[in-house]
Amino acid sequence: MITNFEVLETNKMIRDSNLDIRTITMGISLMDCMDSDIDKLNENIYNKITSKAKDLVEVGEQISKKYGIPVVNKRISVTPIAIVAAGTKADSYVSIAKTLDRAAKDVGVNFIGGFSALVQKGCTPSDEILIKSIPEALDVTERVCASINLGSSKSGINMDTVKDIGEIIKLTAERTKDRESIGCAKLVVFCNAPDDNPFMAGAFHGVGEKDTVINVGVSGPGVVKEGLEAARDEDFETLCETIKKIAFKITRVGQMVAKEAADNLGVDFGIIDLSLAPTPAIGDSIAEIFEEMGLEYAGAPGTTAALAILNDCVKKGGVMASSYVGGLSGAFIPVSEDHGMIRAVEEGALTIEKLEAMTCVCSVGLDMIAIPGNTPASTISGIIADEMAIGMINNKTTAVRIIPVVGKDVGDMVEFGGLLGYSPIMEVNPFSCEDFINRGGRIPAPIHSFKN
Image (tube, rainbow, N blue to C red):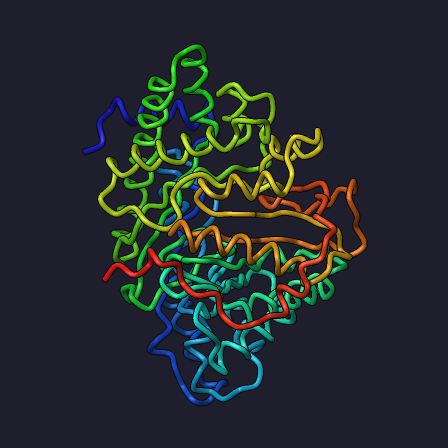
């Protein structure tokens, strides 16, 4: 039961602290669209998406007007295409990416995720076709997002594909170099990818999900920052209690929106993702939360501890507000999408190595990081391998969304636009890991993964 007091308090958070519903994402299973004829498959995919999601944008806007809560994005996730298209025997899935893009455009959503493959133990022929299709697919489409799950705590890390993905990222950057290599901003690689993540670019609709669901991602870094201003001189216990109470309130808003959206669309409610997702807007920054905690800049000594506190307290507060919490849930630390993180990079306080340390305790990983366009593919694969190892060993989701911007070097600035923001090009460790990456094979799962 949402009380009048909660409504008034929510209105204040919206008005003063940039509270919003970051995304309503409809997950749609494409398992019943399978056909050996790729043209028929494309027809089935288009028809199902446009029939299921035809009212998604309208319902999101109606809820926004009814409650005065900004619903920033309306999105779709679908079953990983490498699974759906496996029976076609086609040698490219670019036509499917175009179909997804056309369907997304026709229903009016911002992005559609699920041009994906799950290859933590190895690739099927269909997985290989999808991966090879990524550079062209992300070049010729506007709304399509791709993701690859490269590892898990139960399976280890597929290093053959880690190597290949370094090359794929370079090819994607080259194909979209006229747009600041933006294709790479629509590609994310995971360890322990969740089936119900509503956030792009990593969203896909897991095979264990119901046919159609609504997953909602809430946000609100500005709300947390404002709340911490009142606890500026308090101890850590008070700090933690303050964050938990705020996370509860934010999640209650998401729960209300998710239930109403699901009811209005006649589909099942899936999960609330409690992630604090920043934007380039002033006052909507994870880095500013760290500063309010007492750090001069994100990246200063103590940043990893501050992030651990934030992530844990957000989850503790959020799970009390909804019985169905999922997705990633925690705190995102993208560079280009957070003006405070950008400032920290410009001041020299934040490096890729420090970001990697922070990913041990955050909800995702190295996100929206722009690097020199001449960075070797093997170095990109090495960065990915490090991040996959953190996820595998710590039994958590980690991810990499890295952008080698063709023609740019350290000190240059790149503008992606919209929620993707802008970023300084970050310095990459120049020493080679090529011989390590070229070993190939699979890194075995850690000993503590055997829990059956």
